[in-house]
Amino acid sequence: MKTQLIATAAAAAFFALTGAAQAQTVGHVGANYSRAEIDAGALGDTDADVFQGEGAVAFDVGSSLRGAVDGSVTNFDADGGDATTWAVTGHLNKTFEGGLAGGFVGVNKSDDVTLWAVGAEAQYNVAPKTTLYGQVGYGQSDDLDDVDFWAGRAELRYFITDTFKVQGTAGYTKADAKGGDLDIWNIGADAEYQFAGTPWSVTGAYEHGEMDDADLKADIFKIGLRYTFGGTLRDRDQAGASLGSTTNLFGGTLGQSVIAAAGAF
Image (cartoon, rainbow, N blue to C red; front, side):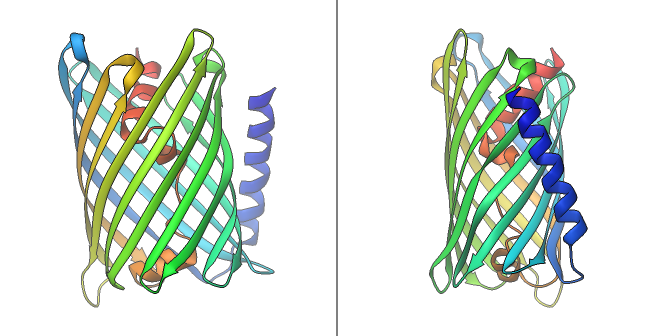
């Protein structure tokens, strides 16, 4: 029942957002490659190549409301095989001087696992060149024996210029299952540079994640290329086109690799 309610809310939100989209849009499309080094404790170490296509778009809905949709397709290629996940998140926020606040619904799906999510988010300019973003959410999957996920994530973005951004992130996820709980936390740092006079930018990132109860750790190194439309990196940030996705919220790359593996094996 909980999954059906979240799915209904997600469908309603996506139809409303896409129907209200205006011509004035800001967003990006991109491709990333990551190398994940995973330490599974007594089970040994493994490496994974992670390939991802992703994008996001934000638009005015009216009455000081902003809508946004982001999506990704991610392939995990590890020693034991490969798996693919698809994710879409819809956002609807009320804008105010220096920020925005609202909520999101989304879905994250691998071959045999579907995770539905809903939550709240807010963004505020704490300084002229600094943006603080926070996100909390609940996720549920019938395919994982009715596991409930509770997660929170924060991002602090600093714009050296309108075309050069550095960012720090931190997140925590609790998976509440019938057989017990799992805690996942992750921290990271990344940078993005947009070439002057062009829509193209390059990204680089590092992320560390741990699942203490399962003695699982991961270090992820990522590079990427993006095409931004509608303005600069700062314009994208202020328009609400850089909000958090369900992919990042629930455990980051480590959490997504676990979901992908659950669907593949």
